Image 1 (cartoon, rainbow, N blue to C red):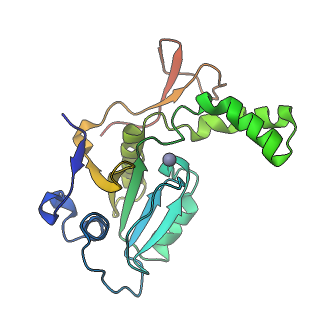
Image 2 (spheres, rainbow, N blue to C red):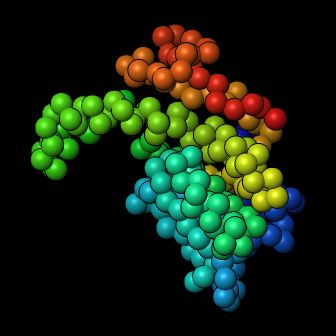
Length: 215
Ligand SMILES: [Zn+2]
């Protein structure tokens, strides 16, 4: 089954999100729904820092947290703020295909030489920096990760609507990610990285840490 649901009209928005800020976001972005007027934010958008993505949304419509891989694990206080003080009732988590936070180890040499040559770092410090942080920011697979984040956020903020979406770089459109296609939620740790927890599953030399319960 295709895990992504194309949304080119209001009828294709999944029923649970209709008449919500999630539906408004999809309408504005995907099919040029006329912009509403907002005095306060209706929505929090969590999306990747990647430069290839731009949302079509009205002013004041949303808080936006941009972080590599749409990974909000290290932005929790900001999420809580948007809910508690900003008053938002819905979160759109927007992963995207071809994300730079997938398979970081492939870019290790570029990362290190870029810091050395571009920023004036010592090679050892650059390598240590990569090895320390890459495991935290590696997302493994865009679709699985976005879903796992959505489930984590739903557990953390039970009264908040959380919608996992995928932005396709090729057409610039938002797609639903089917929740029912959830794969075992795992964090993939390449063997080069030191793991801080005992791996719970080991497959073909890769260690996997089970990050969440499947619900
Ligand atoms: Zn990305």
